[in-house]
Length: 175
Ligand code: ZN
Image (cartoon, rainbow, N blue to C red; front, side):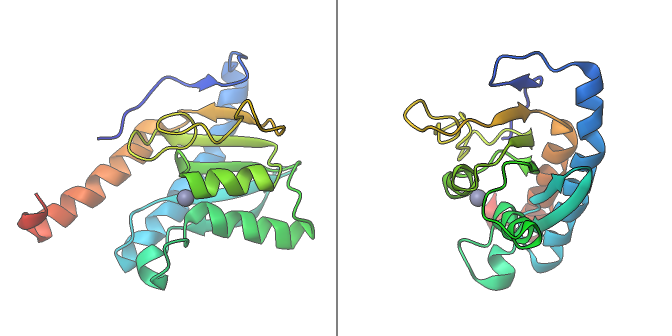
């Protein structure tokens, strides 16, 4: 089960409604990106990287399509953003993800010196943004990024629920 939480920011700042509303259109882009994964039987997870009001990277989960355990949406979005920005350092970039990142992707975000991460649904089974592990803004690491969680969480969770419900109806053994 995916849990949803009201939006909170790890830096302790309250999200103003104006700032919150600004993130919604970009998260919609990430949800559209996530939907593309389903065509290959991949879990719908999407990400878009935004700099100065422009999308400079996008990606969706391609683990099944590419037979690659590292083919996560966030990795594609980060790599494309770095290509466009011509630097590995993404300290001017906001990454929008439909799901709380795993340990690998969270590690990549730290390596990229990402400025801000916004995610939709929490992942209580594997989230490295605090749900299971605390890779982001770990007290022993120098890098700090702004984190905003819960933007369009209900939509993202519904997208995932629908995907797994269809899987189960296709193969009742998956229960
Ligand atoms: Zn990941």
